[in-house]
Image 1 (cartoon, rainbow, N blue to C red):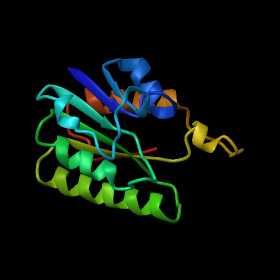
Image 2 (cartoon, rainbow, N blue to C red):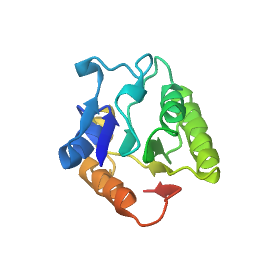
Image 3 (cartoon, rainbow, N blue to C red):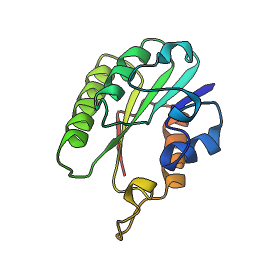
Length: 154
């Protein structure tokens, strides 16, 4: 199994990358989710973890989902179950809808809906948060499940 993850240098992506290794794709190594081609990194044995998000092109995760779903064994998209406003929430809603549609078409696609996760993006939030390491364990649950998992909400 080949793990490919976007946004592997901090937060959720870093925790997943530390658990699995594999191919980490981030701006730090020249991968730009708004313009780079994911297909050169994945194959039929790959699990693609679609983690990175950018305000530069909020629908980049949706494009990566569609570019990868036919080519790899499994796609896990990192989403949200929090109530935000603006581009972020809209983009995550579209990502969720696309995951649900592709799952219904028989693809092994999971939308992982997360609450507030202890990442650098929420450094000023003082409430209870999910650890990135716990998210990595939930990714492990999804990957090792004998059944397809459509949505997992934490």
